[in-house]
Image 1 (cartoon, rainbow, N blue to C red):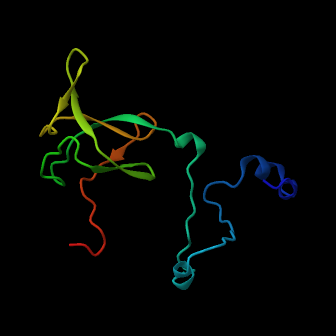
Image 2: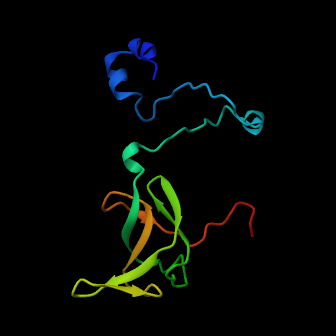
Image 3: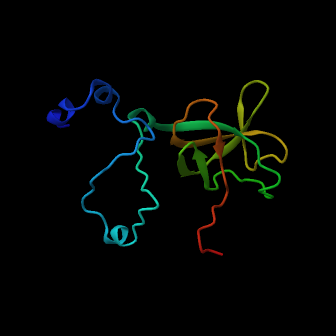
Length: 144
């Protein structure tokens, strides 16, 4: 960081940085030609990042239930799905399991029809009780 630039800022901005939702002017170099050609000033460019504490990855365990209206088929273990957690979307290969009365996890080949099951997968870690969505397929624009 350039210390001379930080000296001109007031104390609050210097410590906190810019708050979320603040409009900010940025100068970006080496932009692809297509972005300049098709840029529409009526649609702002959103710039975001991931904090240092949110880059950790590991095994996650989620409790899920297949929605009876939106997905008619059962989900199979080790089939790729897309998991949406907060702002992040990842493609992962979950293993479904159910917890026995004595605390053991028993692997399931398919998700149960009308019961909750556990999905264990590798991905970016999320706080406990974070809601997630797991669509089986996402249709590409223009695809049939």
